[in-house]
Length: 622
Image (cartoon, rainbow, N blue to C red; front, side):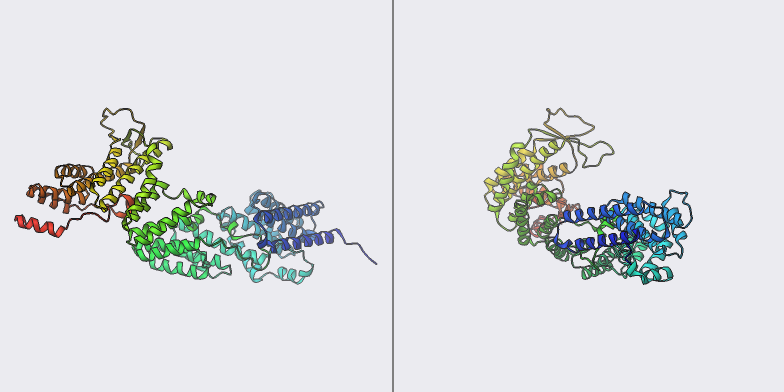
């Protein structure tokens, strides 16, 4: 005789139908948008939650508690996948309390750690034990997603037991019995074994990142090396090798760090952070060619379309990215944007003598910045130098490749966009005590106006270099003079001495701007003096070269040419003293720290130090 299904049977069938629908929607995940996937998750969680409320509408009983816990598990997986952590934790708390009621125990605590210990103990070897363990997996996932590693540490013993039981089936007869009744068991949206394996390696990665961030590199290395043998996707195993390399780099073992980064790339060729970290190691070791190669590979990889996370073993609603969200890990895995890497590549090529290659990269960068995909560009442009600076650097690189006409065109673009915005007067103030050298005391608009003045002056300076390269000395003098005329709009104001300066359009605390100003003033005066020398206007040349040395005493080019002019004026002993003083200078600014357009031009008249020393010998001074 036909008997209608009982309520628990109907609910179990409803649960199984929902699980199958969720899995079908997940299986099509690669063909649907992220918004559609989120919509599907919302629908699933809503339906599971409705079913759960129906089941919990009757008093808890051992006969249907397994079904209830299975539906709690499914609901919480969907909530967690949508980052609805509070809702998931509330359901887990309620479920643990109902387990205690079913087993005849009471929960007089709101502490989740105490509650979980009590729930696990009360379930004991009952048929509910495996289901309570599955819920503990989800609590573990929630703590990991919320970066509450200390709670995971407090239940370390229970977590280890959970891993043995769920993954290996060791030491728990009730779980074996439950597996034997699998056909009758309610279905789950995510296999607990797969979830536990994911939690194991993600927890090790997160713990390693925290220890590394705290300076405990050796401890972090041990955790990460053990994690590299765990079952996981290639991307997660690559993370363990990557972070092991970061530990070794902090322990001052660069070669071993490079080996770890290599293993990370061999494991997952899309692990761009390993390329980036390798590049930093090569930079630290001074291996410029390897650094350039790593930058080129990094840029090529960043330009590839993003890879989608593979789905292993069917449905995977909880992704590693959801569980690995700590700030410590984010910092360790951060990689510059493709445009930022392209800029670094262009600059490094120019500074290392591969100027033609560097020019091509600069032109590619500017083309990308002017591309139609402006929305993507805007997201990256904030980390790059401002557009006038990029034009100045690209123009300077073009001059280095003997393309002065192209260089002047780039400089004209800078002048046309900045000159009208240059203020009439600027005061650079000494910063107050306790404020760093780059501290500024003005608005963003004021900073921009100071920058406009310096960029326009730099454009005239580089154009002067172009005319010097062409040996058009008169035009060179004109452009160096235009640079100087802009720079004299800036007045320096010492904190202990208040000169009577007319009201300025902009006041700024000096720091980096002062260094730029002084170097630019020294370069423009020196090269105007050199240009005067080529026109045999020696007294004007001497004046400019001496003023250059006052503004920028460490500039050896000005010192050598000052001695040359003195020699031509018949003041040979003064010339010899000037050369000796110049050669004795030991403080030289690294070219790596200077803007490209403030470096010495690689063309123009040069003086041979060997010949100058021979002249001094002829004077009988050495």
